[in-house]
Image (tube, rainbow, N blue to C red; front, side, top):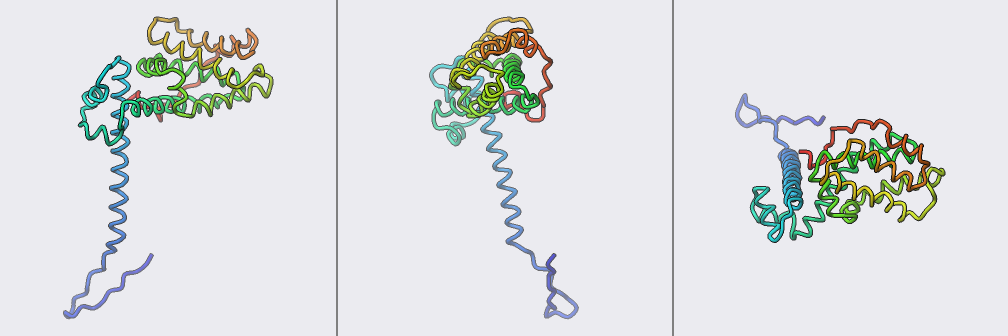
Length: 243
């Protein structure tokens, strides 16, 4: 640690105080303000997206921005600091919803080595999330494939497990686009069903079983995999719509 040099003052018996490192102090204060500002921006963006989720799912028509502003309790200027158009807001919400759910689910999926167990686990957890949080399920079902793909993580995670299953003979070798659609189509339809109808508790398991069979997993094996106990999902990083 550097030492400050004391200089004798002109007045007898007095010494100058240690000089302050003003540049260092300003840097610390500036860094703190920057972190606080960034945290506030993230919180406001989340607030706007949460409000938009409610507005879109409730069937808003016309002045979407006005309804989001009213729901969030913010000014028009604040809204435009984050989003310029309803379309931009819609895309951001799709990305946030898709990615946050996948970030929550994928660590649990990766607890499995078997590709069929991974796909089954992912499908069941996404459907369970949609059932527990109807606004999320309804939004993704209404948004369709564009909403799922918006975040980008879907295109990374699902093909990874499908490729693994095809490579080791667990799944039938078919074009990746077909395999992805065999998973995505039933999941979107099931999210719609879960948010509009009353279904038995085993409904997500039955959907996962059907998907596995479509991918080439034998009937008995598909049933066993799709009914296996699900690992617990960590609550350390809940998606924004759980707040």
